[in-house]
Image (tube, rainbow, N blue to C red; front, side):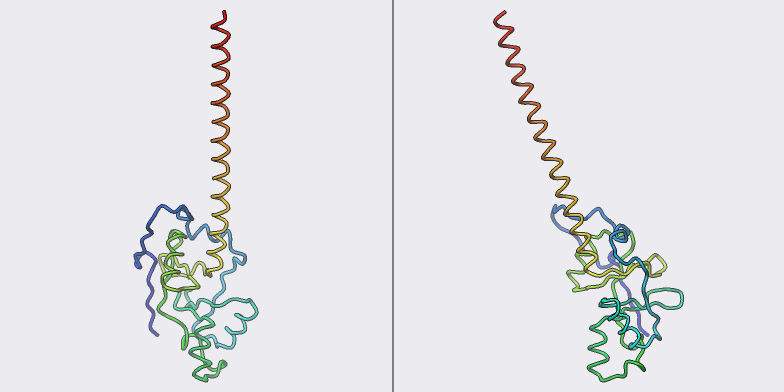
Length: 193
């Protein structure tokens, strides 16, 4: 079967502007936020009925497909099942993942920035992002929900840092005003003497 994979770097998405987001966070950091840290995948010869049942039981929308060496070879999504199985009236017990999987996929690397991967997902209308190492071995599989959770957490972190900066600015201002008043007070008494 045909497999073509592009990394986020090869896509060449450039981020423009000085918007403070989660630019410094890496895909590796996203693991800490994920609810289910289990690496969940299927093989190309897995029947679609088995994959569909797992999607239903786990309330997920897609699964990665790997070969016997755990190298990423594709993704099967609910959309693949509907458009390539149901619409074509194929038997879910007799159809395998390799027959309907999306094999031209974009994958992230662990050191890619979360912000750049979100930009790629938005531009390419991707809802699931596999993460592979240098040998194309699947390390993680994230949904757009995982990335949104990371954005929300980072937004909360930024708000807290902003509050800390404002507190610092207020404290410094109060200290400067206090020192100015004390200086004026001492000047007043020095002039009287």
